Each structure stands twice: as structure tokens, then as C-alpha cells.
Amino acid sequence: MTYGQITESADYIKSKIKSLPEAAIILGSGLSPLGDRIEDKTVIPYKEIPNFPVSTVKGHAGNLIVGTLQNKTVLCMQGRFHYYEGYTMQEVTFPIRVMQLLNIKKLIVTNAAGGVNPEFSAGDIMIITDHISRMPNPLIGPNDEKLGERFPSMSEVYSKKFIELVKQTAEEKNITLKEGVYVGNTGPSFETSAEYIMFRNLGISAVGMSTVPEVIVAAHGGMRVLGLSVISNVFNENLQQEPSHLEVLQNVSLANKKLIELISAFIEKI
Image (cartoon, rainbow, N blue to C red; front, top):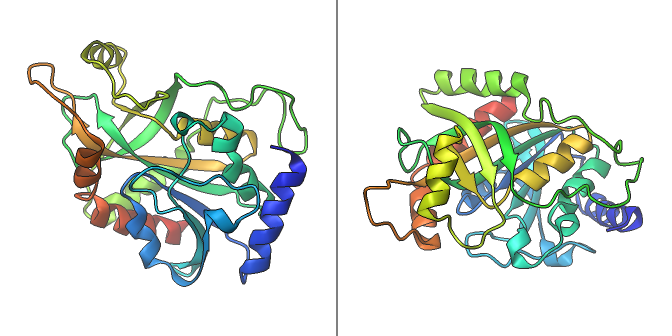
């Protein structure tokens, strides 16, 4: 995707909204209801935005929303794009580039993830403290210095300040949070039992099929990131398990109310 295409998309969004957003939120599988809390909003279907991909996965509404949440102007993506849908990594992360040209410096990414830590339960919310990538890096290819440096640091890709702030927010709201490392796989197949055991032995707490490429590009573009995973199911090697996308959506709905309350209060603080 070229700088000109990114500019065209950003200019189209600017022409449709009243003011530029202060922060952005990406909502993963089954987490679209947060968008309903945004007030005085403009809803732009992805298919109307020049050069934007279109989400093909159930549970991803496919709308860009710009409006007010807790007196802050926010941009909210109801649904994201995945490498397993057949998009290139540059297409998957294209919305992050557009956010960059909208001068957004704060990003909240959410996802539904499989629990690897046996102490987790379906419906838990996990702060992503760091990630391991098992996907192609979206920065491979020619580097445009207008978007970021050739070799960006990933030493603090998830903002420590944001992590402490969301913990404080959760305590105030009496919401229990877990925390841990997230591993991003390409999907779309779920992980094998051997892979789950390997991840657990490596100290990984949750596994999913998104987020990592977006966060890499956000870091490349100088954004501060908070990552939150909703645990959709937890691996147990002693039980015969057949995870499904329907199960993911059903279990994620258990956390929607808590997640909406948490993010709304967090947005007010940043």
C-alpha cells in the first residue's frame, strides 16, 4: 500500500467527521458492542473508504466509527482484518497507517484469545504485557521514512504507563484483570495440543490470530499501545476439546460488559 493510498483514505475519513480523534480502539471478534456506546457518532462502512479492506469474518461488523466516548473523540474499528483471510500484511495493517495520518498517538487493541495459562477462565480479561510473533513481519519490504524508521525498537511495544493506568482503572471499577504474553499465529486453524503445551512451557499466557502485526506497525509509527485479550476458552490437555469460532463468540460475550466499562473509564484518563 502506497503513501498516496494511505493519504487518500485518511482524507476521505477527515471529510466525513467533525473533529480528529484523540485515540483509536480496535475491537476483535465478538467485541463490537463497545461501538454502541460511542455518542454523536459518524459510522463509515469499511467498503466506502477508498483502499480499505473489508472484513470477512463473523463477529466483525466492518464499520469505522468516529464519535465521543467519555468526552474524548475516538476512532473505533468494529472488526479488523486477518492474514488468514488472504490479505497481505500491509493490507492487514493499512488502518494503522491511516490512523497515523490522522495524527492518532494512542491505540487500544483488543482480541479474543485462547487461554494457555491453566489459571485462566473463559471470560477473563488479560493485559498483554508483551508478544511473540509467529507471523510475517508487516515491515518487510521498502521502508517509507515518512511513516517510521527502518529498524524500530520493540523493547516497550505495550506502554508500561498504559498498563499501570488500566490496572488502576480496573481496581477502581472492581474488575479483575489477568496479565501475560500473547503469541500471534497466522490461523485459521486452531492450535494443536502439542502447540498449546509448547506455548505453556514457554511462559505464554494466550494465543490468537491477530493484533501482533497491528502493534508492530503502531510502534513503527510512534503510537503508544494498550493491548487487552478476552479469554475465549482455556486449553486443558486432560479433556477432549473441539474449539470453534461460535464458542469463541459466545464466551467473549461474557466479558463484553466488563470490557466496555474498563475501556470507557480508561479512555477518560488518557
